[in-house]
Length: 616
Image 1: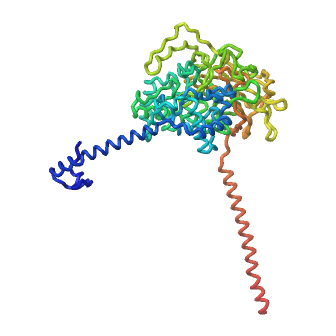
Image 2: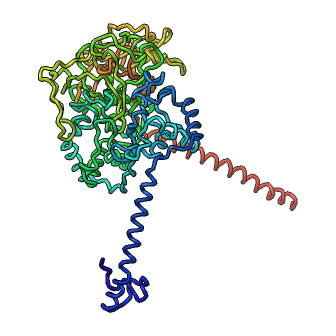
Image 3: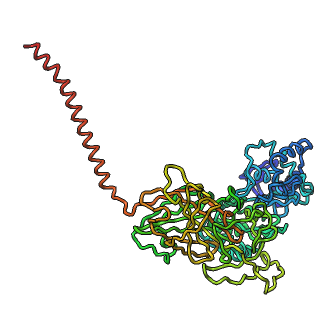
């Protein structure tokens, strides 16, 4: 081992800038090198021993495990089951299905692929929960309660007792600065590594292999929508995404990139994924502004027609109040824009969908069978006899039916034959499906609806948001996306939805890269429904049906009531009101000054008059 000359001084003291001659340096090297090597080897041995000790199984004491069991039976057993196998009595109503602790497979980790998570990993999931699942966070648990719960969870899998399943956490470096150049290189890697085969060209979970994905337990899974970072169950930050790329997702087709990509390449891929979304938060809206235009509303212009309109993003949730419930609908958000001129009003609604289901049919008046509410078989074609359970995959996925489905490039376009699935992930060979394998289509089509009160509500009372009620009906604009035209329905409650024969509603729809874009157009006035008047606030609600998930009737995603505001056609100039206000204020000030002067002038003249009177 070489010690640089100048680093050693006499008597072995450390002096970086000391001056010594060559003979002294050789003497010091001979005397110090053995000692330095011994210290270095001892330090390395200590580090290795510490790392090994850090990975030794920590199963807690019997008292801690018992305390965790009591807590588990109170708060967790309903979903995860008494045996920890994810088969609690509430499990059929959950999607993704609860974690099977007996398998020892955990997706959200900081440890390498195949390893068990650290206690801190489990602690974070318990504290924070899993976004967009039924796994809520438990921030009110004390640190001791969380630790005891973790000790109990470990008893369900022998992996936590086997040192072979222990690995130290990966090192996540500080993120480099985001650049467009890095994101562009990441886009090339995204295609090269065939990420698009599952996640789609634009990351909207619409890849050609997406309908066929399964986890190790055979459950159908759906890849994440990468454009919605707030749904990432491993976290939305660039550092979170890098960690997931490095660890992979145990038990799913999502591999670790730790060995297949360099650190620099992983950050490039992270930057591209990050560029697909606009925010780490959902940033949902609470109102919709209908922009005014003087142009003709020609739906052939497509989305360009709505360039001047402000976008609103509303959350979609499952309809769980009425029979035909949808506990976990496929869509979780809808984007809306609206414009109007002096004669017509138009809406553009957009949402992401794994595929375009343009076969079968749909209607808000269809009845969903009771079996679907309990996770049992559905009664019509396209559904599996036993609905597959759901699991989350990359950043957390939503399970769907396991049947294959065709894709569609555009609405009313030809349905293409399904492409051959890629040869596994990154070159692993898989058995090809027969060329003549039948593709089972959904019995139900995708659909969307906009809902308004049939008449302007009086006061703050609104119709029931699930298709109205007997006293307050709703006007439903409905588009079955397997059909060319739009329909209107009158809703007096979910059990009383009837078609309205009014025909002044037009619709146009397209599907591209995992996104539906549907436009509605109608005259401003109406004899059978609400009229849209300028400077008016009108309640509005939306519904989305996913045919692939067998959604129809009351089984759907929907919003609560929101308000839209119809902006005036010609906004008045602010010059005249501002001038009038300024002149009014000026006039008031002049009058006040005159009154004050008059008052104080009289007060000052009174002593003078009195003095003059006394002098006389």
